Length: 177
Image 1: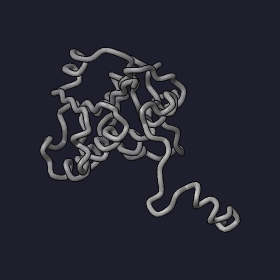
Image 2: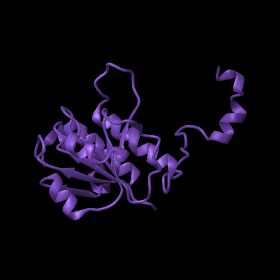
Image 3: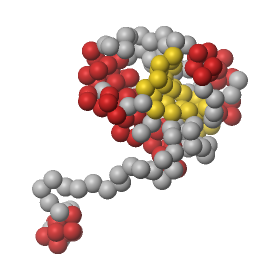
Image 4: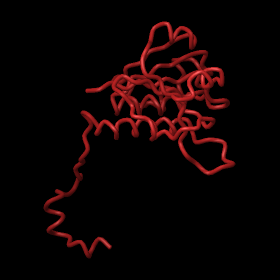
């Protein structure tokens, strides 16, 4: 399975980070937390938001961006409302890293200005500040996985009380409308 890395730079809200951890756990993406963070790793809100998905998560922590870059190299993509490219424009390679900044300020502009061809934006209406961090991360993650044709992910679900094939015969399509 190709590998995807999610990098949160100085996250501030534990509930967002917990939701992001859950998204990473169910997609197989590794989560890299870059400090300083606005909460402690043992924060009750963080653990609660991630529910029981923590055991499925590959989690890495760094004290700073420089510590992160000392240990990691690769294809980096920086998600920002300040970017000129759409998040769906790049072709994301195996092993890539998607960076997301803190809720109050995003990624440092000095990082963005050095990599304009790797900065991407999720389109939205003008005048709005930004999407929620956890939502932005989910959009970016699933764009990469869509490009990779959802490797190793289950793409079909089953009903609890019905069988899809039997339900189709039992309920003609006209009854659904």
